[in-house]
Length: 355
Image (tube, rainbow, N blue to C red):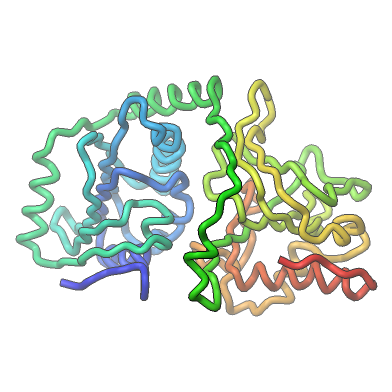
């Protein structure tokens, strides 16, 4: 038995570890990540042939609004990677269990407090145990299979996703009320530094059939930025969006999300999700077309041996060529790009804003 936590390692790495030599994964978790894209990118090179997923779908539960994205992303990624799958629903589920198998025989299992979400696997303070006792794992699998659950057909999954999406578009999630009340100064007054969970993304502005022309500019103050029909689940308030123009591939500036994402009712756009973001270097955005900072140049100026994308440890931004509406960056690469933006302004005599 091995104790696990998100303090000195994280559950994401431990799940990848138990999948070595495995051809099957069993996921049991009430809450799920809304996008499985990064997780499936981690499976490349492994011999995973089947994934079974047990989760919840409770009537009138706000989690249903997220489960539409979760189930859609899970099914699409399985199909794209030629991985068999099944989805079971257990509305009394509270436990979180992850088991790897090979030819039907269990290899290793994780029993934990961590949901199969980005927060649960990487960020939250979670603890669990890893076991490799075959008899105990067989007993655990038997218990999971013995509880009352419903296996969904592909048709039922499609109907559920469509019903949730239709509800969300007819009755989008309301904006949460804002209050001006803080207690973090009390919590952090004994600390010299405050841990930040700020995340960094690179985002295209414009589309291939309507590129961002060199005579356009983003707002020097608050800019509305849009995402595709699947909700931009990874983006939240406080995150940083480094924007570039489709067409020129030049950087347009970088922004901090201050509101959203919100669904725009009655729009036929392919990009109906919106965030409001504050321009953190308006001097650059005013003159972005005078700088030759492109997607390729910012990569060429960075250490080629280091990863630049966050979860799949990728060393290129190639996914942007295939219609991705954002890619999460490592903090180190994002800092490199932000420094390029600020240095470009500084070298021309203006004073950039800092975060």
